Image 1 (cartoon, helix red, strand yellow):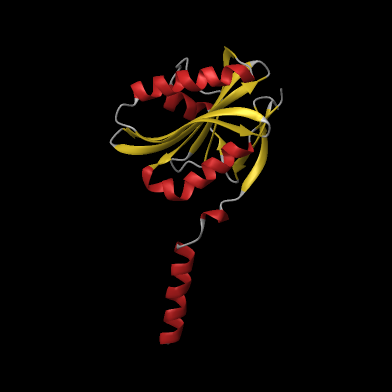
Image 2 (tube, rainbow, N blue to C red):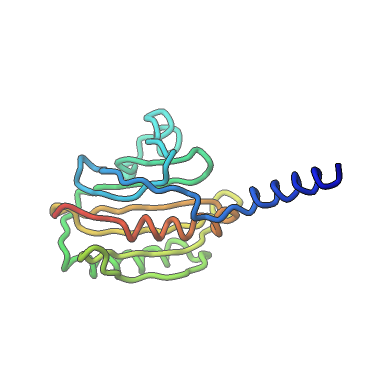
Length: 178
């Protein structure tokens, strides 16, 4: 009886301590096939009703948001702003200044430019206060067919240890067509 109980407890502990590598990522094409990226399996596109609730009719509303309905989201915004590889540096500087000014209380983890799949990709990584709690955010952006694409990964601070490496894998997987 004791050994059965110990085995059950051990099984529960092992299940609770599952590594983040168990979050499976799948390739998806988004923004009318313009971008290929890894997205966590089970994430669904947010419905129009959910978008209306979260953003209303705001002009800054993302083009598409994938979510697991558990406070984790990956938003894509294909903007009207002109962009090319040379402009990614300019956007990186501009976004860094704007975000630092906008989120004065944020804890910053990194910002800059990475070369991902032979393309410049700018990024900002920080933790910001939002509605009484902290939110981990990884913003990354690049040019896609002459326009600026901005991706924003968000999760609650308590989920950061599990989701931060996944967010970075997602960013490192981005492949833009032109």
